[in-house]
Image 1 (cartoon, rainbow, N blue to C red):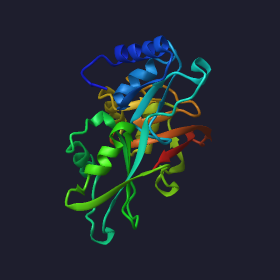
Image 2 (image 1 turned 45 degrees about the horizontal axis):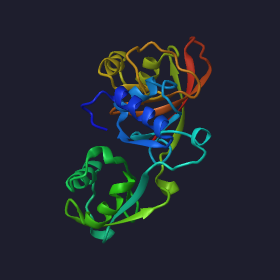
Image 3 (image 1 turned 90 degrees about the vertical axis):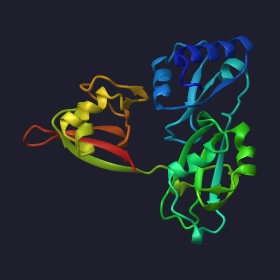
Length: 254
């Protein structure tokens, strides 16, 4: 979706198109800021809406409008998973997210056609998994021969292997209160002033919605994402210490 247009207006237009034409309509991949605007509109569309990035935990997602209940049939999200791996893993460079994205964009592909790029270090095959919009998958397979100086192969796959999916680490931390800024500060080893700055810079997202208030208490199941730091799921409170500080439980994406 073009970042220069009004995101909420465009989403409304697409939902109305799905309703009018009685068929599923999908966006391209939306970034975190655009998805925040989508989540703020929850329940305000002409038809049912949902967001999906190709696997659980994806940051960039496609929004789809329509449901089986409304249309009488189902239609999958137009997302293809591509596996990109070096032709000779033994001699391949250590490539970064930027290297893969740069090579894909260098093919003339628009950024919104590309979803998450999943890299797991220390894999013997050095394979990377990329989510793309269906209609560019074949083009990538035919034209992506190199990433930086490494000769690569590209193939489609049905699912992302279990060992490279996002992993969650359970943690129990002690905070002064169940406030989102206090938990962020403790989890990411930041001062309270640094954590508050993240809010003023629009870097904190709660269940997909950009947060400007740092005093919000969390409830069980809330997902928090902090740009440049990571994301976690809040699993509730776990009692108090002798000094009346609070134990809270989280699962951090690692």
